Length: 430
Ligand code: GLV
Ligand code: MN
Ligand code: MN
Image (cartoon, rainbow, N blue to C red; front, top):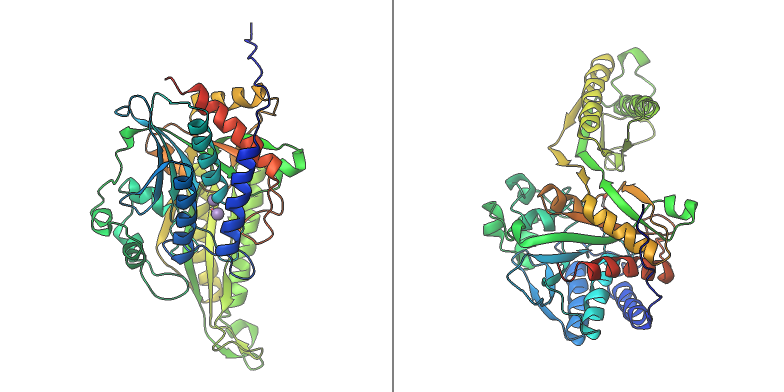
């Protein structure tokens, strides 16, 4: 017999709405770049976003601090503070010309929930902590999840030495400047004992078109795609006069790269036909503007490579195909594909118990409880892979993400907050 769960009556969420509108407006107004949002990882826009959220948390009477990773941590004390705590949150950095809700939605949701518990006099058994993490986006330094990696002692020396995409400063220097204890991070010392975190719950916008297409305000995430990346692949051929060199003597880097990408697209289609989960992107691709010309055979092209999948096996299989295509096309066309350091982010599975709890909460609230995997990456993957039970709620959003047009309806956000709050409230005496 299936158990019928008692419905949760609609709550008065006017205070959550006011808090969310005020915070999202402040974030947009103060961290805009003229076109979209620009809160660079370990940079000024990100720090400003942390300051804005911290000031609001203090106004609400919540305790705040910066941890050794320079993340903002907001705490609601529990009855038994020695027990491992329940954590929630997301990131506050953004891609250049990004949207206002990617990451920030999860931080604002966590603050609304902690503030609501405080207001309603709910004192959970375990302490609850909201993390406004830094450094989730790979746009600045090539590595994603820097904030959560640093907390768990997982950043590598090569990550710390990576230079920013615009400008030449290292990740380590930028981290130090905002207050990260870089010496500990460089030693691989965890800044947080994962055994202290009883769970990680993250609300996030979907960033894709599925919830809009299926007319669902929220969904529950089952797993997160991992990825393999190269920030820079350089195809090196030979420059020459576009009229004077016949086809058989050319070593054209653009034609070779185009062939490589066409072959990757074919492999991608084949894997999809075999039922594999995979997406492939080359988000940066250019000849050198200092030397390129209509009448010059391009001697060099630089591009980025990224493959994502929920399966490690599929990631590695696609990567092998990529390498063999680089070799074959290189031999046939007389070019060489030079790869920089490979950057890996592992796929992750969400915790079955928390997925069930979130689904139950959604049903009790009269909301859909559909499951879906996450195509985009999230810090929840890092916490899950460290053995911390982790779960995510997706909120519908329009116009995709990583672009200034990203939209989220407040009604959908409040639905996601209600699901998260109900699940955390159910755990309050455990
Ligand atoms: C995170 O934003 C990602 O690139 O998946
Ligand atoms: Mn993002
Ligand atoms: Mn994000």
